[in-house]
Amino acid sequence: MAKKGKETVHTGSQIKESLGSRFFDGFNIIFLAGVGILCLVPFLYVFAASVSPLEDIITRRFFIIPHSLDFTAYKYLLGSKSLVRSIGTSAFITVVGTLLSMTVTVMMSYVLTKPIMGRKVINTMVVFTMLFSGGMIPSYLVVSGLKLTNTFWALWLPGCVSAYNMILIRTTIKALPHELEEAATVDGCNYFQCFYKIILPLIKPTLATFALFYAVGYWNDYFQATLYISDSTKWPIQVWLRQIVVLSSGLADITETGSNIPAQSIKFSVIIFATVPILCVYPFIQRFFTKGMMVGSVKG
Image (cartoon, rainbow, N blue to C red; front, top):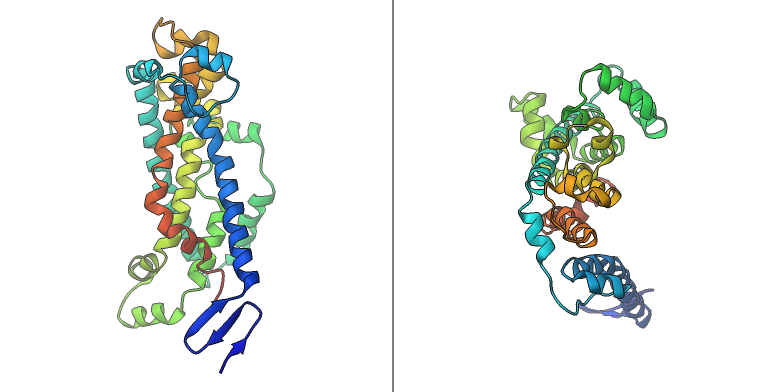
């Protein structure tokens, strides 16, 4: 017996999509492919410009296929001590900052799912930080008063916990069946053991998703480092890139050389160096991404 609905027609074990459904799917594919290409084009232009001689960059306003290849800027940057040091600094800041933020955020989220004293007050304070902040000058005075300037702690501690991420992780944990923890408690587990052995394995997709959010934030952030780090030996790659873009006339001071390589080629090449490492993380986390964002949004 056939049963006809809005989108599909069911005949036995076969399901046939309606014409409207197929048209909608095709439109979605074309539209999203177009958006993806638009997002990719600027990156292709930067890459093409980074491997092109200065004459092509000046004479051609926009291109994604270089007429000739010139890897002089890449050879020059790979030999620069400043670039290697800044990339290593960024990697260190990103890895340690992500681990620290995820540890504090997840533990705070778990605690706030329990009936502890003052939970509502703490939740209200967390939401309050999403709407209001002290501002740049008070934040700088606090960091300076704690003697954190010119240390990496100035980049980690002020933004260690994202209220938005904490609320979503808390919602994910609350959506898990309470019977799992009750059974673990009966077996002799305390709160920490329940958290480590029961909760964390069940929310791995969520952890991977928000770890990616934190990692991208730490890697791309330059304002905090510009504000709190005056020692050039501790600059991350984004600050080093900013210095080249803004102070291109002082390129020799930044790159520790008197080379006459054009500043434009250096700029495009540094953008590639600053972008590619964090892009390499996405393929390893992509399978967790959609599930991590959706888990906890619907309770079964």
